[in-house]
Length: 496
Image (cartoon, rainbow, N blue to C red; front, top):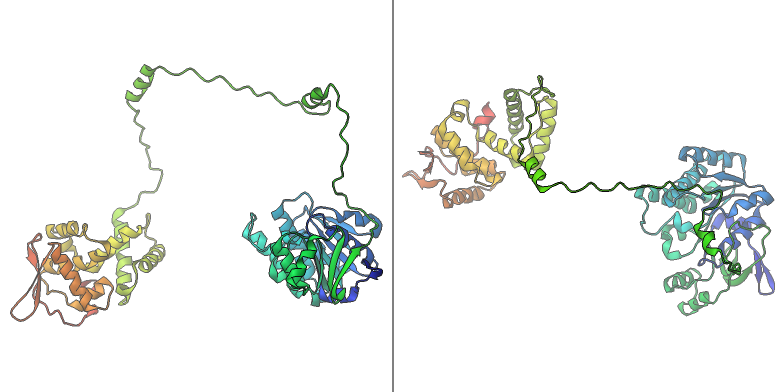
């Protein structure tokens, strides 16, 4: 790879294929030069695949015969090409130049996935070099979609964690260890650490190399092309080395100071006068705004009667029979209430069951919203018959219930129906079930709440039986035993 002091710095290629390599260095530290040196020195001995986000490594094709794969293809096509690359053992450079970050992540994931999923007969050793690996295995979510990030991170994890048994040896380079996913970086056993300045990156580099935290300051002083190596394929102890020269050059070079051209008198014309090959822009003229309308005309338009739209001869949508719809809703509600446990389920669960049953029964029209469903469910729980429903007393009961919270309407309508029909007062257990509770004490508190609101009056006869009187309805229930058990099969809606 170069020189370590007065000795050549060698890399055991077979050991690298089994242990993988991580390279870190800030921009300009010489990471790409290091990767190019590694690729050139190992090209005659092992198949290579380069994931190249900037198109710097396509020049390997002229000297070493790498095939350049343009990533501007569909993901399925890239996957198939990667499978053929492993089958025929061709060294390639996946050129991602010109794609945005999310497209690069998807293309790299598809290509790496195709190489990873190759058939067992083609698991020959491949050196997979990924430049700018923090783009493809980010430590945190960025501006790209979660789907693209998961695809790319999964492919990089497979490469570094499970690739060894399939012949894939990952070599990843990153500007910052803090930006690289930890589960990807942790699988490397060989490290080449270059110049870095941030404390967190220096500390992580020192930890990976087994160095003291006080020695981490040395990473600030490394010159370009100087790295500290550690790993079974490089050195058993941290070893400073200098990367050797390369035979090919990248298409992009480091910035060099270039003198400015001599100033000329016509420099203004050079920048403001279009050249002969430039397309002249089309002049866009903005129409002058119309003059403001007089206030008298505006007032006349506002006071002018709006024309009445003609009624269509036939309705645009199918006419819904409201009676049929109401009958369908009532049938579905009865089916729900036939379940003895329905009273103890939350309204949201019953509402979902209601929507499903409406679709099964082909109930026409838009389904009820949750508020309307609760209202209809409370009426259905009351179990009122057709004759009672048409009476004036029941209409008044519905009006009174509209001022009660939704979760209490079912209990109120249940006792109101019993009063209108002259039936015995429901027991505490029956009231608790109507409220969705197993606690008789809570049922008694509900009656106390209604009495405090002045809706009903609770009294007890000489036999200690309870009677509920409704002053606004002019009726009361027959005496009933508050401690009687709840006989659900005897309720009106269960018998229908």
